[in-house]
Length: 406
Image (cartoon, rainbow, N blue to C red; front, side, top):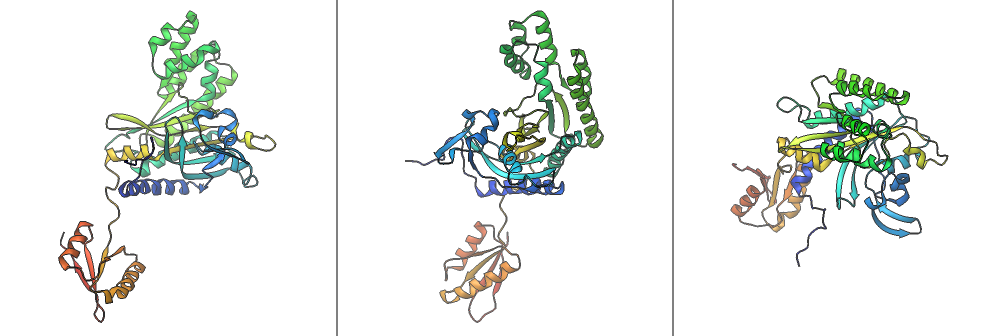
């Protein structure tokens, strides 16, 4: 029998691990420069925590077991767990809370484990908080070398607004809203034209399809929808946000489009939502997504008092694919500096001591484990492992150091 990992899972080999660590170290550095602190939450949570009041569907969760503590499952994302922690153990911490994470998540739909890096900004509901999220995303892309590779950035920030999109669909019969939104999201004009809608609603559906593109153009088209006061306030906030971002990013960062058909996997978003799509090998992969959730924290609060929140997460594997295509990832693990070789069994203790000495000097050291081996065999071993320096160790002699020709 050939043993393989389960469907959707995979082993990460040393080079892949080195690449992910390269990505994580750069993201972490950006998060910390923006004042975010790392939080580590439990991989295993109660199902009612993970479902976030029904915003996360039960069928998307991987249930592990039932216990005296209730039904337990593996987290499909980190926002719910961090929201829980913020209103319990962090309830007295000053607001806003700036937290980041590097963690694995598990989702039934994809039948896979994946790794995410992300941030949550809790207790801030302003336009500036929205801007901070998107500027932080841009800084992360810049740190990874994806902000501008050989000219324009290969990445695009796609910005939507969950509350506004839902409100624009209210005139449609409830049974049609999902179909209309799905057709708009997939640019499926034919479906919109064949839905059993009144002429006015069909015209509205086709007009909604045009609400994507340059922010100023989309916001101008939006005024043709006879917006109520609440919708006008959202549109004004979107205008303020996109102006802030344009003034900060100019032409130096990723492109940005406004797309009011954008929806996210989880249904707790109440404000802006966004995705980051990066081109690689002729395709556009979503490497990050996030948004504002101003009602979620109230679900976990003992007094049901809510507080605003916003965050995003990078999918490390998707970033890795985009960076692999761009040629910016390391293609090998860190090289070992020295091979320490005891000439005889009597020299083994001295070889261990010499290895310790080199490591104390921040050198990477590998011990040759077979004393008394043939010199050429040792050299061949070193070359196979890309080790360029050998320290030959013998009692009563200074270490003999040899640099191998590449």
